[in-house]
Image 1 (cartoon, rainbow, N blue to C red):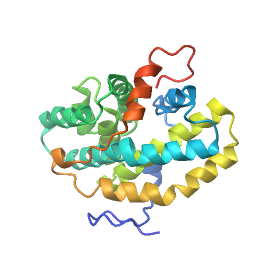
Image 2: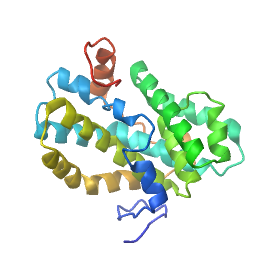
Image 3: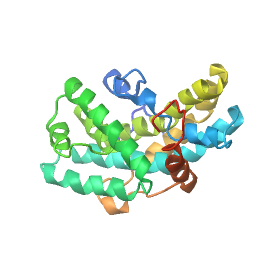
Length: 237
């Protein structure tokens, strides 16, 4: 299968080498299993109750926060080779600006902290060391820098981020709603082309950080805030 690292933005398939597949693996010890990507509050609110509802949730998340996160990851991957460690703080502010919910910001930084710890042990790289100076960088920045450290390109980082934007909540849906895992995996298979398209769009422009996609989902922001006071809850976000 061809591997398109170009900047054309065409939605062509991408194949990832094993070293990059490790970053997309849910077994990566970075704490992803404690986050539902906003699905738990959506379930508690009655917005998602079955496989069809989950499919709609995943499609909406991919097109909004998933696209924004993938674009940030691609930008971070492109920046990882630049000799400007001071600029990470600015890209982190761009991530902050695209995350209006304080609860989602905390979740992103918590996931970033966990992934940074795992990535620095697995793929030592100056960019990851520079990110550590921020203490708790946003998750997409660490994803992008880790992809670069593992030898990936911006398009690879965007693909890993977009893939994680739906697979994490999908796994959470099985646990929260007792859904048929085979039916949920069929949903993910049906989303494959959309994941590729989002990765392509997200990696079109990585140099002008202010121009990166800023797509948002107000309902997800609201659910994230409500989730902070929910008891009991299975996931952190």
